[in-house]
Length: 341
Image (cartoon, rainbow, N blue to C red; front, side):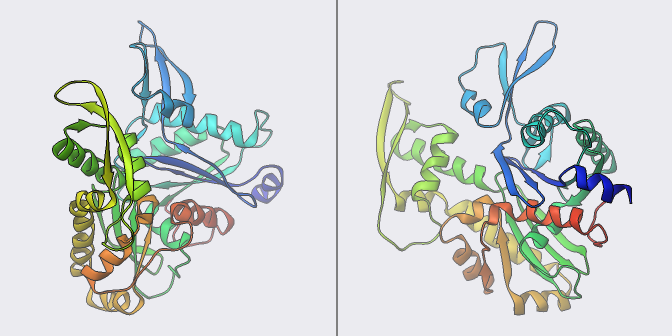
């Protein structure tokens, strides 16, 4: 009764704090906030930390700060590393979404990585409650991703979801509202960007930033051959001379550079299927694989995984928002079995 009354006074929310991006979804409004998971802080001589910027403004400061200012990523490789900075980031985002006058705090569903310990769960819950939430629901990301992709997770049928994020790729099989098999691989968009950086360094003698590598991957990257050859200009520091320099690289070079992380993701799909109970593996074989996450949008990645696994692979519309869409369903339908805690 109280939740229904309070719900009329405040919007229910879902939050997906990811390695690269943090998304906030408000019931009835959709995703209202999608910003880089970066916090810029000023630290004085006494160790006191003050938040200067969050999101895009903080990311623009990376690599450009004086000694007393630094940028922090609260989530690294899919794991929350700095709960204090996570709390500061979420408080800023919730104030932007809700406004400063919160008469009644919202109910908030937060997506957490699979295998998060009880201590970590308690820390996440306290961090979100400190931002003004009146109730916090924690849901594991693989289940939220499956819900957000529209899969019938409560059915007695195996569903395989591959979440290719920035820091990690999570491969999971769900059935009856629970996770039957799950594997986390430290390969994602960041690993792809690192592969591009290594290729440019080894083949062209140029050191480029991760931001530049990410721009190259998004502009001309692919996992499978085919299509017209595109060329992009890359700027960085020449290793021999130390001077700034620009070189042109084409899409074939980028595809070759991405072969290693793409192969690791494809092989991990096979390994996960081998560890899945036979009946559920048969379900996956008949229904195929759903791939979500920001890095799942790499052209040809679905075809590369499909060719290795011998199964159809589907990338839903807006794969980046699958986790936060699934998390909001648990606020709207609190009776769901997939609620983590």
